[in-house]
Amino acid sequence: MGVEVEHGEVSLDNGWRLRWVRSVPVDDQKQTLVLLHSFLMDCHQYDAELEDEELRGKYNLVSFDLPGHGGCSAPDSCTGKDMLDNVAPIIDGYLRERLGVRKYSVLGTSMGGMLAMRLAAVADEEVIDKVYLLGTSAGAESPGMIERFNNTRDAWIDKDLGRPSDRALEAKAASFGGVEYAGRALYEKCRALWLGRYGTREAFENAMSPLRDRTSFEARLGQMRCRRVVVMHGDKDRIYSVDHAQRIADGVRQEQLERCEIVEGGQHYLSFVQPGKARVRAHLLEYQ
Image 1 (cartoon, helix red, strand yellow):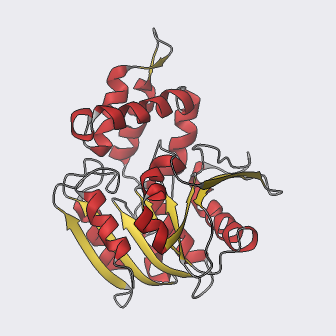
Image 2: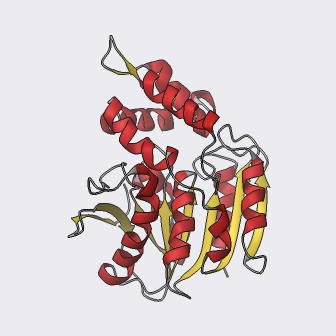
């Protein structure tokens, strides 16, 4: 990375292990923006944002790994069903008590959006300003989607190669439009991550279980304690239909809802590739 950042990795007394990367120097006069990545990615999904001089001029940026991803792990007693709910107060407490963040906004994509909702429900009043929910869902997974996840896991490792096949890797790239759409350089960066960090069936399952097994948050959307909510969803999202965005918008308190925007041409990992990348960036720079 061509700009100055700080990396952190810490084992907590409660059995959780956290990893994060943030922009430095930290300026107490700026808003802090917490970035939460998508399934089978890690905190470096937001390297472009961490390197963006305009965004760095407006925010202190910090990106966390999600449970089962990168360097984040849960204690053995924590199941996939509980993991997102359990890690939310851990991250909120770490931000405020260890990193000295008094107030922040949070942006989450897909699985990261699911965690962002839960952060807003556990944080104290007036701690979280805005919540940006990108390409995500508040509900539990349907039986059909659970079957799809499990089939993907079972096909992830090629028995002859002993690693994910090229076919499986290229299929995963559909989350951001596919190899040709995203470009070879971006795909190769993700491919290296998938082979290195998620290149076994066990690693894939550990990353998938908090996503697949989570409980529904829909009944708790009105309990989010934040000033504003921004919902954005790509109309080319191949994982969650735009109906998921509308259900979130309908479920939050209407005085909180700043906008629900369907991005024409936007992919599932909305801020990762164009045109969603530009739309999300514009909203962040317009922050009031």
